[in-house]
Length: 237
Image (cartoon, rainbow, N blue to C red; front, top):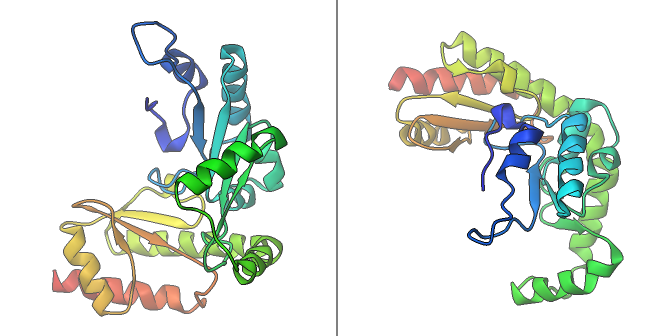
């Protein structure tokens, strides 16, 4: 059951109202949050909001899960340790390839008593791997070295967003809080294809919405270069 979340931030009372306990409905079994919130623009859920929703869950006797695929981006934006944002959840997932720089991999954090059950579900879903040491090494490097690069990713995203505004594209600067920039563009799939031909990669997130994501492999001069090529793609349209 989805709860309205302006800029990715749900109201704790709205979460409380969405909990179902009636025998006439499927009962609520878990409360899940996403931080950062992807489709809201890579926005950050404040620590106090997370804590308030956790309190709602405790009062309802429900476990909580944090989809922290980009948890370290949220921590960098808020200026806190990632552990602060993970604290209090029953389970937390973290992606090692989104922002942190590993080629592949994710983590599931949980109490020890859930580990055997989690491993069982992993096997059921085909998630067992052997000879994964080289990937684990990349994941360790991502965790130890990746977070320090994230503030620069966020700065580049802001520069990109401001440049897109100068090109008269519709961008909500309030939503540009981490490493994502969403822009409104007519015929987004065709626009993204033109960008690809010009060497700029982006995602069409529907018929009129494009997502740009900055990352550690970008050079400083590549943001102005990308903006020039985006302007070129717009002129073709």
